[in-house]
Image 1 (cartoon, one colour):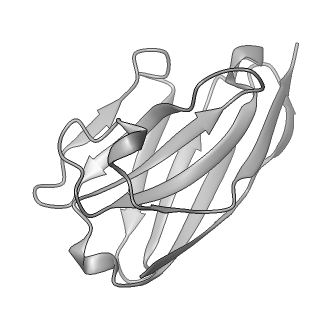
Image 2 (cartoon, rainbow, N blue to C red):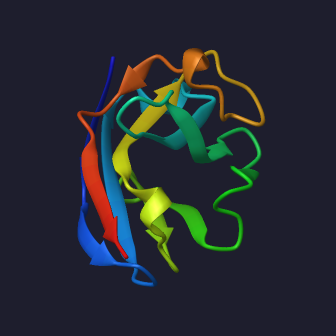
Length: 125
């Protein structure tokens, strides 16, 4: 089992920044991929950013490339999502996820086994 707890969401104006954190515990060492996903009302859950634990490669959705950065602190078992130049269309519930059967580019939500409870990000224009 893997437990994931997100934090850091909030409300910001367009152009602002937020950093999301995901504290992981349990059998995280067997996860192939860890990533951030988001879901806006009425829309499908989409992969935002992820990394492959086997080699450390990172992957991003085209809509966030150059603005979002995923990183990890192994000592703290924490994954971060730094979000800069936020846009109103980034408004969504953001989820951290870990996958035992997920593989690069690690952005397919159906490949993930474990999910956090989510943290809301709201960007106003």
